[in-house]
Length: 418
Ligand code: PLP
Image (tube, rainbow, N blue to C red):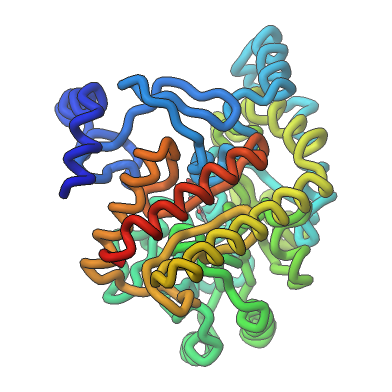
């Protein structure tokens, strides 16, 4: 309560904006996850890996726009190409050279991509991948996992029945549980069109899938004739070719999003040529902004020049080192705090051992998560409200030290509460 009051007291402009926004938007914004209490911090501007809120505080940005902000807020080459693209006019209602170039770059990097198409978001990428899987297999059941997140209308609960999703037929299995997935696959063997899985549950708390689990899903898909779809919207950053390249497990289809458009709105999906070729005949897929010139131009620079295989590996290692460091800090302080994740994506948890699947947080855990978020803000660090850190390329050693110090201070000063 004290941390919440301190937060609210120092952000009158954000509070006032929230009041006004509530008059015209349900919840006061259009991104559900930014609806945290007592009101979300409103940002005014960003530069490299720094943010300034509308009340004048500045922060180290470790939220990294929920992984879409990989390049930071002012990458010079991306700014340059965006300005140059604007000079040539927007909304050209036509195909362009950058579309082919970006498609070729992605097909060259991700093992599963023979062919790819673009959308405006990861959500749409998943919707289109499921659509084509349904047409390709002539079936309409999709296996998804509890705690999975594939976009606004593709959110799956840890327990209970499905929330508002699409009129597709979803069947839920437990994540990282080969027995559960096998039982569900057997029960729906004749109707299973696809198995849709995140190689790491991102929104679900940065919970990595075990390689054995993903390999088992590959076999289950082969056995039942379903298509295996990796949702790599978050995990594609883990190497030049995403988690599929890291693990050597190739799905039939892959969905992409986030940073790949250089920070512009982006989504995509692709995979085996024999599946994707259905877009030449039976499956329509239009979309006014699918190949918008800003995303295509920024994406070519982002993926062709900046986020090379070497840079991807460096970022991965930086994240691995950081997670080891903050976990050491928690161990040394003897508090039940841990950081899960893979490479440059981390999430804090207030329990031990580190969870290997989603769980229903207790009220105490929820309170600690909120406290952690407010304490980090007080230390000048902005991260995702659920305690997720997504490193961006401008985050260097000094910024990492800043975070490690803040976590150390949290573990020590809050130890009595933990
Ligand atoms: N899939 C995963 C794994 C995600 O993490 C997200 C977004 O966080 C999405 C899909 C949806 O992407 P978008 O927000 O671009 O629609």
